[in-house]
Length: 356
Image 1 (cartoon, helix red, strand yellow):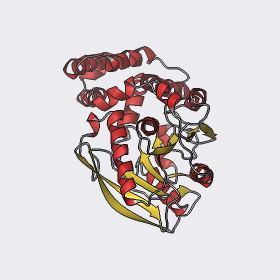
Image 2: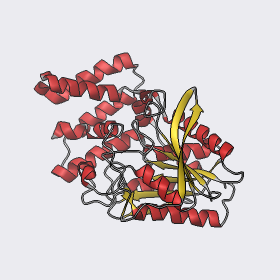
Image 3: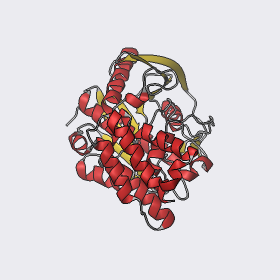
């Protein structure tokens, strides 16, 4: 149990990019909306072609959103264990009068490139390219913003600072703590909830310090393999465990993971000057709800809302543990969709003002 929990946060990040069987079930408690159309699009960014889907209403949209997925290589629907929250968000908001563009991450689906080599700055560059494409195909004057989930929320924050065309942001479970602190809190919360204690804190911290270090990959990889072998003990000699350790090392040394661990979003969050809706579930074990309190402290102008009984995928749940994700119905809760849509309606009805 100690070993399993020690690496739980790494496993969660790695699993986010895996391919799962499709199961389009829509919002919890809501039939799919009509009155919109979807079209396949491509966007060039940094020498890479990105594939995606633009979903939009029949008339002129009230606003347009670019969706930014969380950590790991994910498709345009942000599909995890049969849930497709981004598809549900796009179709729901299009039915409410908003255009939504969602893209496959680099190296996934119809997008070229290498997801493991991406950093959050690369992600922001891709989002800006997508905003530029929306500028070219939507009527003039349609305000544009970014909706990001988990690490994608951090990308939304950075985009609002880097691109003046981003007029608002919505973040779903955006980390407000440094990356290594988020990962430590994941493992600690899950361990104590399941067993009442966590014996692996020192080991986890040592591994993350190595990942954060300036060690080059060719030095870091064998160092991490040795460190994980020590944690696994005699089991590290078993072929299946050797394979598991190597898979964990491959994730830990990737540029994307090292950038995630090193990034501290606090200063960027303080600087956000565009309208901002921040949501979190109170049963989220991946980005703990205390992160939402941190956002409120860092940026008092952000509209924050904690959703009772919701997990990291913004599904109504029982325990909040990732182990129950596959058994939950729907793609995203109706309460989440309504919270986003009502805030956007309020924002667009009054006219989106220039950044403070």
